[in-house]
Image (cartoon, rainbow, N blue to C red):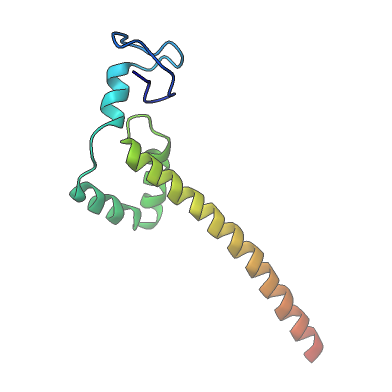
Length: 107
């Protein structure tokens, strides 16, 4: 059997992972099970609320008790948000420089 948290091989009878210290029953409960459609609908609704959604994404991404599929989804959303912010700053700065250069020629 393998630990759901760290991926190391552990004995089938072990109650705790010797590598990361995670309880086997906790990792099985946290990582297994499907997320229902109703839970996904509620998740998407809550993420749409501006400040609450960002806080929930952080909680779901870094909480040990969140379902693994929801945790991976939250992490992916946060990565895309960082990429979008960086691109917005780069392209916004380029657009501002072009605009400033165009306006300086008019004066």
